[in-house]
Length: 465
Image (cartoon, rainbow, N blue to C red; front, side):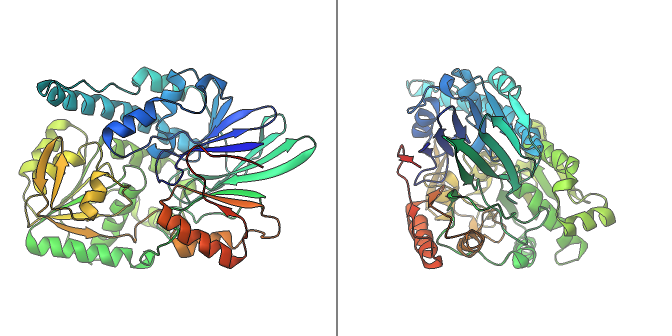
């Protein structure tokens, strides 16, 4: 068996790992690479190391676009196999992949008008709605903890990763030449003690573990302080009559922020002010959250019983129409606008930033990870000017970064998770989905735990196991 690390190798986005066994060739994840627009487009449109038609099946860890978003491109280029995921992941992909195609259409249309004026070549779509519909027909839902033999000698089990709704740790038992090898892929590991979802589950002991390392060298703020920290920012915005702009991923982070605001207002930690969730995808995703209470932790289940709806409250408005979104330009502060995407690379958040980023009374609250070269990272780094839709804007608004809501395990939590695994059985841990500085620190931490063989693959590297 061999593993080829194609996407999310020494970077954070575009998760894609190719496995070749004696009888099957398959992918773990097929995500969109996010970064500089032209570079990202070129990376996402071509499959450099394989032909899509040779892939027998895909195993999908979760629905985030950097893990699932390039599946329609794979299908468009000849992939005809199954896509195995949890049922909640499938439900989320039914809206997220359609939204991804829609966002591409709108963004490409908008950008190409500007490129035409500059006599530049137009951008092309990666895929359209028909490609998405075809891809969705190839999904196969699998319950947590239910082992299925997806091919002769290849058995799959999903465990709860606690990252977003339906997220899974992939555990594979692969039999080749009479020998069984246990290979696991973390997907994105969540954090213990976060609201809404259950904590990441322990897996059986594998010989090989492909592990994310997004925050492998950094510790987050205590998640138990998240509500108090958010309440403090809200109170600051009320005092200044700010528009509080929160870029947030439509799936996971938006629901966590809304849930936290609900609790803050209920407990009177901050005055109740208007909250707008301006993202059609977030609206639909929130409805899917409501349909999967089996994924909730005990605390959220109790809140659900007492309050009926953890994602709805007085003065909260979910916005879907473009007209209502535009009206927010004239809304007076204090108010809160939550919009996607979390990395500020697409969607309505770019319009809200363009309209509010130059006003020093406003606040931009960054509550998640932003990859290198994304607009979100430039805001986090507090660059003096940023480019939005081809125009330069001065970053005059106050920028506050809060990582206590991060859905990624930090260094301490990643090491804690790995410490549960049998060191004597582990042959190698492969670090993916992280930048090199974080990976090197995480690797050092794993060595200190007694894991001797830890590899940080380079893009395209193939390792025989």
